[in-house]
Image 1 (spheres, helix red, strand yellow):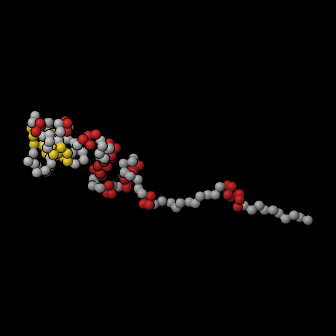
Image 2: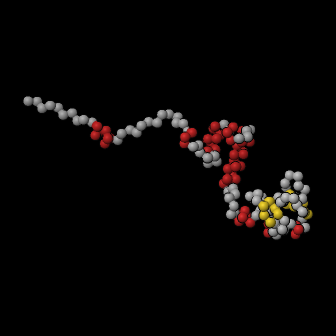
Length: 151
């Protein structure tokens, strides 16, 4: 009997192997009828679930919720953003986004890959000018010169 739930994967289309470190559980292809009923770890959400014949149709078995898309797993856009960030980190030779040059971070923000900076951290480059008065407001302030009557 297993001491833990297995995170199995179809390895080289020949055997189902548990991919957890230190586990050597495997089942040869063709004998997978022994797997249903065993406790597995979902590749989508990492929750435990009971293996079924349907779950073994995928190379990396997932629970029913993840297969149906009911989980809050990453969307395609989130996966693409993650890939873009990893590519930028690799090109710059750094490990964290904070280590990226500011120009690269700005470009990633413009492209929508990184979230925008919070407004309180954005410093204006030049002083904010006050709003100029409209013509009507200016006309109201002008005193009309009324010359004295000559007698």
